[in-house]
Structure formats: structure tokens, C-alpha cells
Length: 235
Image (cartoon, rainbow, N blue to C red; front, side):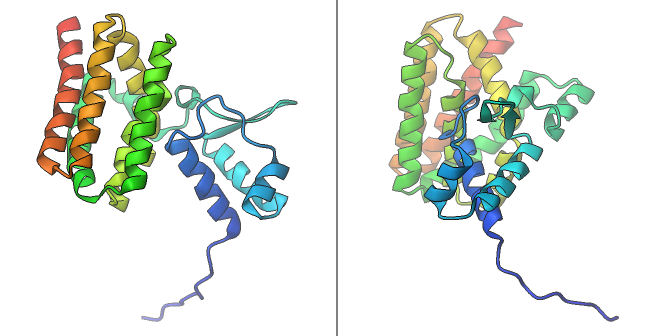
């Protein structure tokens, strides 16, 4: 059999710009509803051409991560307004519930917490600490802190250093965001639950900081179990 091999080409600069902006969104550094810097400022900061930036932005718009607003600029799109996410479509077709989503998260994130405890570096811990502090500020201001909560779970995914897990969580992002938003909107009907959630996040981070994989796994299990029990009792 004859096969034709193509020369290996270096990664396009626009793809690198695309990946950098996408990571900022997934890590919660660029938040839903937040306006992106103008093309000129982005090109100067990244030291690339405006055409390169424009190509990267257009790709993010096609993926539904950004949206153009006429006369206003480019904004990070809210995940619950994106209609083309395959997981969201599956939820609709299969009539899946929050309980189903939490079951999947239990498997994915308990394992992730254990891996993160073994592999997280100082940068990963800084991201987790920052998301926890931001969540405290958000809920103290009467908001849900959905973006900060989602950023915490994404930071934990990156800390696994497992590219397959990170890939899954990137594609799971919309689901995670919407699920967390629904969870918090119900949980926070009782103010006592706010302190519980913040405390649980703190326990997960401390277990990861101590590099105690079993403790991290159990802390994540308690966190998700707490939410599962809440919805089970709520009926």
C-alpha cells in the first residue's frame, strides 16, 4: 500500500493566540459577559498582527466562546446561551437531569482531585486560591459566584496534567457552568449552604496543597455528595 505523507508545519501563530485566549476563558480569567480588549491592544500585547488576532477571535466566535455585539465590541459569551454544545444537546434529547450530571462529575472530579494532589504546581494552587477568594467576594456581594466556582473546577482539571482529562473538561465546560449555576441558585436559598460550599472548596485545596491524594479524593467526594444529598432531599 502506498501512502502519501505531508511535511510537518509549525503551529500557526493564530492558533497560538486562539489557544491562549481560550485558556483565559476556561480558567475564569476572562469571564462570561466581559468585553475582550480591542484587536489593536491584543496584537500589541501578544506582539502579533491584528489579522492574526482577528483570525483567532473569529475561530472563538464560531466555537461560541465569544460573540460580536454591533457597535460595542467582542464579549465572552455566557455558556447557558450557547445552543450548539453537543453535551447540552444530549441533555435535551435524553432528558438528563442535574442528578445525572452530578453522577458524572463524581467520577471525573474525584479522580481529578487525587491526580491534582500528586501533580499540582504552585501556579495551579494560585489559580485555585484565586477562584476561592473570588467566590467569597462574589457571594458576599449577593451574587452566585458561578464563574469563580467553575474556574475552581477547571483549575483542578488543569492541575491533573492529564491532557485527556483536560480535553474532556474543556468540552464539558458549558455543562459544568450551567450545572453549577443551577446548583448554586438552589443551594443558596439557605445561606448556611454558602459557608458549606466555601469550606468544602477550601478542604479540597488544602488536601491538594499537602499532596494527599486520598484526602483530596475524599474531600471532592464529600463536596459532590453534599450537593447530591441536597437535591435528593429537595425532591
